Amino acid sequence: MIPREIVPGVFAVGAIDWDRRIFDELISLPDGTTYNSYLVRGSDKTALIDTVDPAKTQDLTGNLDSLGVGSIDYIVASHAEQDHSGSIPAMLERFGEAKVVTNQKCRDFLVDLLHIPEDRVIVIGDGDTLPLGGKTLEFIIAPWVHWPETMLSYLREDRVLFPCDLFGSHYATSSLYVPDEGVIYESAKRYYAEIMMPFRASIKGHLEKLASREIDIIAPSHGPVYDRPAFIMDAYRDWTGDAVKNVVVLPFVSMHGSTQAMVDHLIGALMQRGIPVQPFNLTKADTGDLAKALVDAATVVIGSPTLIFGPHPQVVYAAYLANLLRPKTRYATVIGSYGWGGKTVDTLKDMLGRLKVEFLEPVYVRGYPKEVDFAALDRLADDIQKKHEEAGIIRP
Ligand code: FEO
Image (cartoon, helix red, strand yellow):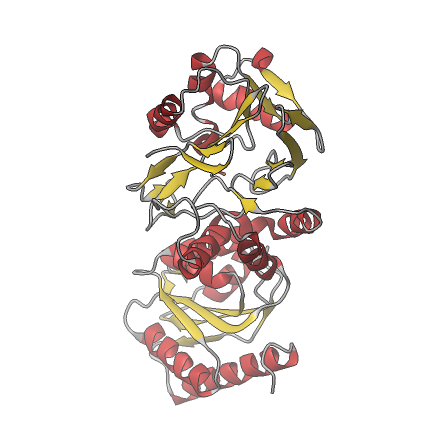
C-alpha cells in the first residue's frame, strides 16, 4: 500500500488486509478489511490517528517511511481494540518522543491490554483540543461505539471527522474514497449489524451531537473514506431510528423436512399477502447476512425442530446472537415440529429476553404438518399482516 493525501497535510497511512476472512473469531469478512491510520502534519507538531492491526505494522511503518516521517509527537488512540491500537507499542518504540493521547478509560485499557507505560500517555477529556500548528484536533468522547472508551477526533480547519469504528465497513479496496455507494452501503450495514447494533441508543445520541458540525470528510478506521458524509450519516440515522420495514426474517433449521414444509408454506402465505420474507437456512447461511437482515425487519419467525428436548443447536446459536445484537424487531414467534415433546418454544422465547418484541402465537406441531397446521400458518401470516398494518409498517 502507499500513503494517500486526503487534504493537504493529512494522509491515509494504514493497511489493506485483502485476505482476512474472520474477525474476533466470529465475524466473517467476505471482502477483507482495512485498518486505517491517519497522519496529520501541522506546522509545529505531527499526530498519528490510530495505528493498525499488529499483523500489519510493517505496512504502517513503510508508509511513514515513504512520507519521510522522522518524528511523531502524538499518537491519538480513539479505541483500545487491537486492530487499531495493536501497533502503538511499535510506534512508541520507533518514535521515542511520541506520547499517546487518549481519554482516561482508553488509557486504562491500553495499559492493561498492551502494557503501554503510563508515563507515555496524555489524558484528554471531551471537547479538549490538540493544536498542531495550523491544524487543531478536537476530541469528542463517544462511549459505546462499540466499547466503553471510544472517542472521535475532529480536525477543525479541514472539517475532517475521524470516528474510528463508527461509520466503518469491512471492505478491502484500493480506492481511498467510496468507490460505489451501493456496494459500501451493504458492507457498512453489515458492519453496523454485527458491531454497532447493540449500542443503537448511544449511537443515536452521538449522531445528534454531530449534526451541528460541518463535516466535509469522514475518515473511519475500516473501509474507504467518505467524501460525501451525508451518505453514511443518513444511512446510520435510518438504521438507528425506530422505524422498521415490512419484512419478515425467517432463520430456520429442518432435520427431516417437517419444519422445512412449514417454512415453505409460511413463505408462500407471506408472499400472497405482499410481505417480503428473507429465509435463512442456518446450516448454510452466513450469520453476517442474517445480522444485516435483522437491522430493520419488523418481524422474526424462528423455525426449529426439537432435538431431544429443545431447539436445534444451530438455532440456539442464532437466537443467542440475535439476543446479543438486540435488533429493533417488533414481533417474533416460533414455528416447527417435534417428535415426542420438549420445550423448544419456551426456551427460544427465554433466549430472546433482551429484545423488546411482542410474541405472536407460535405454530408448533407434532410430526409432519397436517392441513390444520398449514391453516394455522395462514393465520400467523394474517396476524403478521395485521400487526404490520396496525403499526403503520404497511399502508393498507
Ligand atoms: Fe475496529 Fe472495535 O475495532
